[in-house]
Amino acid sequence: EWLTADPNSLGVDSTKFADLDRIIQAQYANINGIVIIRQGYMIYEKYYHDYGPADTHHVASVTKSILSALIGIAIDNGFIKNENEKILNFFPEYIPNPNDFTKRSITIKHILTMTAPFPWKVTERRAAEPLDRLRRQKDWIKYTLDQLGRGRPLGQFQYSTAGTHLLSAIISRTTGKSAREFANERLFRPIGMQEIPDHDMKSFLLDDVFGKNIRGWIKDPQGITAGGWGLNITLRDMARFGFLYLNQGYWDNKAILSENWIRNSLTPYSVDYGYLWWLRDEKNLFSYSALGSGGNVICCVPSKDLVIVIGSKIIAKPRDRWELIENYILPAIGN
Image (cartoon, rainbow, N blue to C red):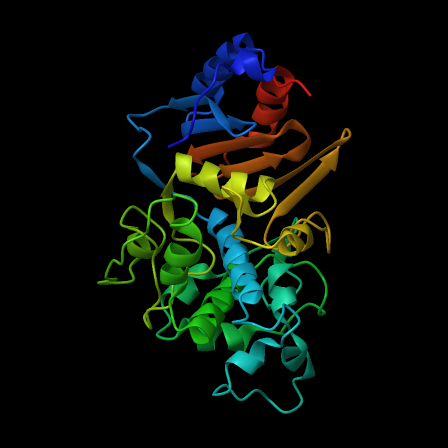
């Protein structure tokens, strides 16, 4: 379990957290919980709407950053050669058009950095991606490969959830295990996170794939773990994952991820994005975050030795979590 400590002993002005609780209740009605880790100790934990430490949250696209870690673990352990391997190398049964040079050129790294083209409209760097169309496909992988390489030029940032599902399939094809099983064995269990049990997908209705019926970590009709969303975990376990990155891939002095993978993951390749992590560098403060719909967040601030985790109910247009972090958490944290 997480060790706790008096915040003031770790250079934290805990009196300022009273404002944090007040502002959450007044202006962030869909926040279900928040956990703050400083120097490896839990210094703040608060829940709302009858949630508690043992309750899981569907963290939406936070899942993508966990998929990034799984790709790194697969590369570190020799299941995948490196992130420059071509995507189509892992799907030999898929035969593209001979003239489709773009599709043949796309690599794992393009998917990790969201620089692989897809044919959906992009507004404000986010894609108006037809995920409901993906949900209704009998074969999510074929559908995604059909869309891959169309639209924008290769190398331009274009956020895509379907693309990350290909990474999950690559993990399955190279390790012989689903991403869920691989995560349980190589990531969740070693750092003390709860293992994710298997749940049958009895149907693929909207609530089963994106809504209230999501359990564990959803999978597609072929049993491939969803790559870009669909994971349910506790806030304390979200904090464990963030702390693993803050600690350069080590947990209890054991390397779970290589420092090289951590470094590459947190390098901006286009706009403010690494390997399925959002990056922020402003006001002389660097941070990186796993972000999910509704305001689900794992935010790591290395210079403050800080991990901030927020679990939220998924709603449209949630209030910006960075405003909360910048105005009500960071001012309480010493250097």
